[in-house]
Length: 177
Ligand code: AR6
Image (cartoon, rainbow, N blue to C red):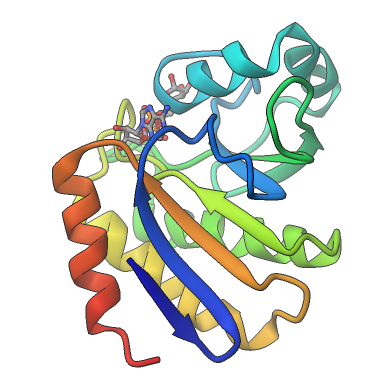
């Protein structure tokens, strides 16, 4: 499912964030220590190899909503942008922190002249954020940030589950291009 907004392509695909070879940067739903973990962080660190955690160590810990960038090591990309989402019900205000994640990732990508970025559904796994509410925040923040982007031309959302993918497709369809 693709949608052109201005001259930026928004896209939802179903798959594995660690296997997005045509994207310049992928986003990690990280932990504060920037170490491996379950879900997205596990898949990214497993594929990248131990060099990723080693490179990240001096940048840790990061705060909820903060984004930092590293190389991609054995991943088929150039960069990994690590972002710590809010733990649902704990880090408040969780909607604003989740919005900070998407905005800060895109602003960092723009600063680094990155043309394409793939996001997972940050905070919707181990951190417990309900998928539909998180999707609305993700897409609204991306749409608000798009007018300030020149280098970023392609934003992909990579969803793991069938339901998650269908929610993104339905929400993207409703966006006026
Ligand atoms: N590719 C794309 N999406 C995935 C993948 C994958 N390989 N694996 C899971 N998802 P999570 P969080 C989906 O838990 O909620 C970690 O252990 C998953 O179904 O990865 O931000 C870290 O170490 C869900 O919809 O991230 C942190 O401690 C979404 O990606 C903590 O979990 C996010 O799930 C971060 O929790």
